[in-house]
Length: 215
Length: 82
Image (tube, rainbow over all chains, first blue to last red; front, side):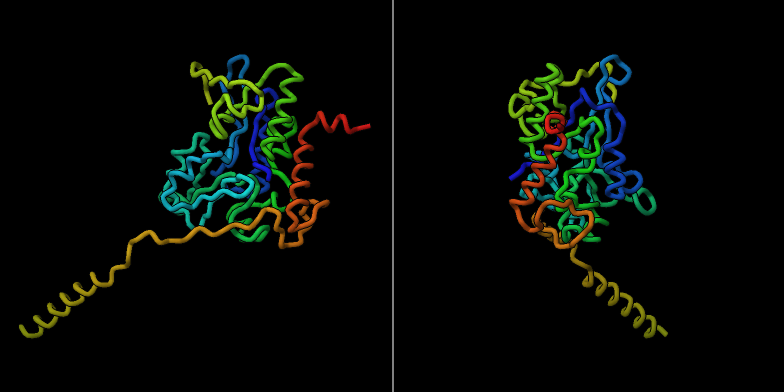
């Protein structure tokens, strides 16, 4: 069984925001909600890096642990999804997530916070696969159409890889071997294990330098 | 007159007392999480479904996803070209 994961190759990301646009368009995501975004590390400093960030569908997801109404669940493919009919929009998951993935649409007056919205790995939600109800709540279910997430498939430089964790790690490892640098995988250790374990580049990941860093 | 006032006051008190009895429960029983379908289950015949795999067949779906994964590997794609 495939275990779905995201890898972003910072050596390749050109900050085109194609992934962000693909996600917005594919799922008809409303204003104010960004399921995916491109973050620049050390912006303006020579050697700056950009990475595409969204829900990483963590192996031990902190959002699942803190949710007071237990609206999260994990599919057989390791995709972390949630039931919007159960979510109360409390925002605990937003504080727990190290990637800032949970989004809260503001609707109505006084900035009322709606139910949480996040990347679904293009796997929809608990509604019937491919149904209109699923699309309206969670966006398109590409996985049930035999496709991978739109952001990864649309990435022009293939910086963002999404799919079976073993396969995307192999692709990334091969790249690192060929180019001989850039083994850092931002967020991999946080999402899927300790930095020295399971790193697709085969090396420990350095932490981003705090000084002068903007994101 | 005073009897009438007493009746009104009594009715108000009665209504106030009964209003407390009518309070709705405030326990968090909003909903139970629904179970999701398998990813390879595709009940709706849609044009957007990728060709080359059989719906409701797990092995076929996994093969399709593996193939789709390899489309992200340009080293493999470049090698496959004549």
